[in-house]
Length: 254
Length: 202
Image 1 (spheres, chains in turn cyan, brown):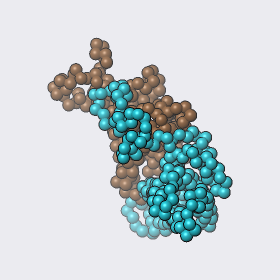
Image 2 (cartoon, helix red, strand yellow):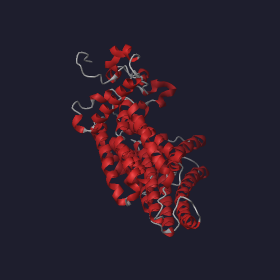
Image 3 (cartoon, chains in turn blue, red):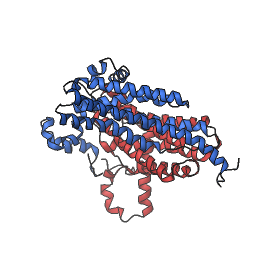
Image 4 (cartoon, helix red, strand yellow):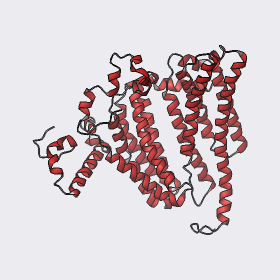
């Protein structure tokens, strides 16, 4: 990263090789040494997709039993999808949660923005942390797991949450639990199906460890999702009855 | 740089010769010079007609402008937050501040990773300056928002969001190879959408 002094205009900077290029003289990644993963160039090969590729991959996540996703991403795992699908999700969670609040409280529009840090932490830890855990566990069990392929897989599995988030706008409890269940099922099937190849290299008992990790993480993600939305709605109803009953100085008496 | 014309210096490299005079001028003059530079860059970035040289002026990036607009937006939204939201003022301020800087960082990093050859701070500078329309809409909504129904509030929000997005998309799209344009542009769009949503909600 450039820490430029303003005297040197960017014309000059673009002519000189940047800090990273000094390490990369022959253009070979391996020569960057142990800190190679901190440079931008290390990750560039994983962004080699076009928008049509991304759309195809997202579509493939909704059909877990077809090998489409595996075929598409085998040679070209990408990181654009995981990062920006999660970012889109964070925005949508905030937007839909706030839109729900518009319905329940007519007079004093009170919007909670606390979802942003929570959602960011949850989504990014699950999307990037679980592949790390899986990779470590698989290494311990003796099988090599392609790290970036798994991150790509997990990131795209989050796209099941996109329509679910939009549908969470509706207030019907049963409906919400149904779509959450669908989401859990779809994403678990998608993940397991795509990890099948690596899983088959393990023995039967060890397979279940991996499957258990995957299932636990997905369940916790979806449960957290539902409970964050669910606890909001019930609080909203409780809040309106409380605020109209209590004597807060700011609000006009109803 | 051309030192022979009488135009006021527009960037620091033109001012090297004048550095010795800096200590002798009054504080207000120094501040006004910086403010004039920010205003000049702002006009350059936001009014498409001013851009005759394809963004070369942006090479003289500075982060004062983005900082001022970021602070102004965060303060506007957090003042408003006290009366109407269940999150505290400092939560809102922190979220907006972090969102703008981390967002600009991530969007720029994304453009670089997609193969765009752009100076990091140049792009952060542009994204920061394009936050200005969001500032305007936040002020509008802060002052007269409580008298308007939700739907009417959407109009300035959409206009300012479109203005911000349009100004920065042109620059961003020119950085990356053509088949990855939409991948570079979508994060910019998401970034301003997020900020507009906050100014609407809070």
